Length: 233
Image 1 (cartoon, rainbow, N blue to C red):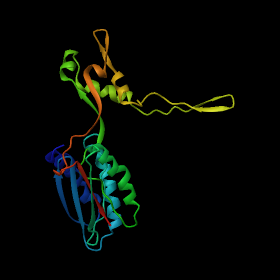
Image 2: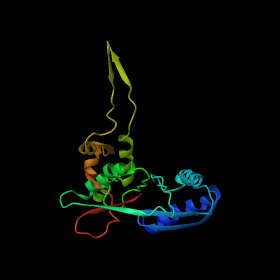
Image 3: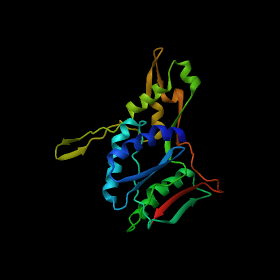
Image 4: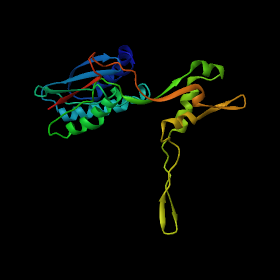
């Protein structure tokens, strides 16, 4: 989402509820960027900060249903005069792709920093978050009278986690697994979408599936792919 949509569809909606759901708010400042929004909630002197943090988090969860689908809950950080960012960690490599750097920062380095006593570590900023991409062939879709929503619905129906249970045979108890979620990327190519002219149209007929990344909107121009994370100690 661009900065204006982030402001109108996410931040503004949340700010309208903060004043009525969170106690002792002095003022709210918000800044919108491409794909991310930052809110600063200032409290009156003597306010219970812990209670305010809990109220901010719960109010955000209550507003998720009114916001764009699949949006993630916000990361709420306590910040005061003594909470000054003293560590800035940047990752760069001339061998690893941006997606690998993002995984390292998010899933390896950040958890190690977060267990330090008194540390408050936000999410990494920048880089390319790894996702499995399904690039659509618009001409192939049009020639079959299909739309992107048909592909999206097929992916939603055939990539789910279902409980399977177990089966007891004799003295052995076996765990039963379901093939409702693919183990390999190439298996997504074989997902059927719909019947067109008596023939089954598969994902591979109208799209290219590959290991990719989200559109990168937050990365400083550097010599190598980079990603930044700030740690508050």
